[in-house]
Image (cartoon, rainbow, N blue to C red; front, side, top):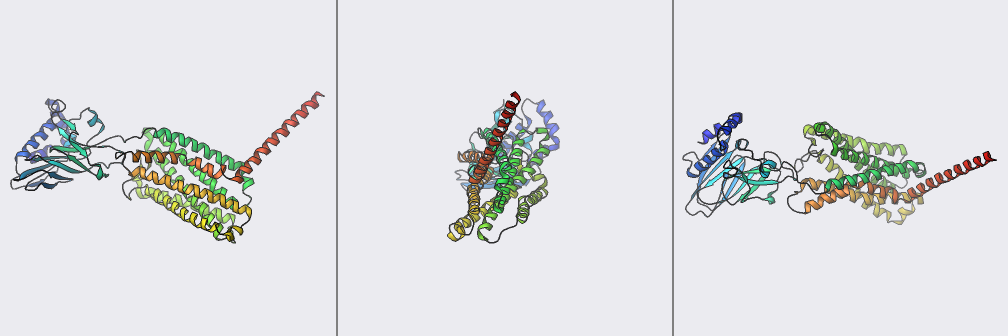
Length: 496
């Protein structure tokens, strides 16, 4: 009978299954499953306790223990039962049957398609079963899983999936293996939601935060344009403002691209996503490398007091670190992963599991730079506490160094925490409690407001920037007053 079932379940016979489903009032596939389940419960397998076919795996055994394990093609079954005089246990694994079972319109089946083989377990004794299924489609951490069995009484006798008596053991969270625990034996499978779990108001917070950041970054670049000639009189001041402008520019472009991913037309999602993800990958990486240039410049200023870098040399090194290296990383990731480079569901780099996926071509460089900035920050703080080092520089240089140090102290922990939380949001499971939801909110708030933090640390808390800005405003005011006085004088002359 198992051999016959195997022959009937070839995928190229789908047209015949649809025909027979229309002929009979009851689902033919459900009737076949019920018949096989009944037959497997009364047979002992004879001299062939295990048979592997193309579409069906069959295994039967007689055990005398309270716990027994059956390993089928892609499923591991553990039965727990008070067996005293032995029991026959039969396992049938169906690889293609799920596509022939009736598709119901109930909320469970409609929103959660089958994502594993169907495992039928029968025993002559009442048993509690644990089944480890290998998912056919890898599960992302934001997708809900349901352990279900085929209830032949539902859907007017046609059968339907039911979760009664079955639960997903979330302690064994995995992207490939799911363990289900059921208080009965039957025909089991795993259903996975077609839509990810959504955190309330997350999109609204993202849009508001990005809007604030884009405004602040634009304002920062505008202020730098106005006061540039007033604040770049020394080499170290020039270095600092070059870094600040490039950090703002990279983050501004990256945020605009991130915002654009929310408005992509579904029909052109593939090409648009690819272009936007490459741009975001490059811009966010470049931002971190410019932060590294800032910390290295600070370290050089304090360690090599009597050795000053030439402006052209520093600019060339900075652009090498800030743009050439990030571009090389992005190209390497793209050509290495190719079709696996982008996760088109979220328009971002792909996470494929532990130490796997293109996302690590961003996470590893970013967190490495954050760690390097921490080390630089510690060294600089220790150095600046020494009076000899403080006295060795002039007053203007010391003020610039303090401003850079303040920016590094503020931005390094903030950006490190932000992107560490971002990586956690990809790995933690939204189905296991409230902590993942809190982490998602923290990441979105901090990440979307990065432009605000840069504006505060780079412009509004910098004494020299504020003084230069006030000077420019006074000049404009004086120019406006003089122009108004000139116009008034001309008008009085004409009247006379």
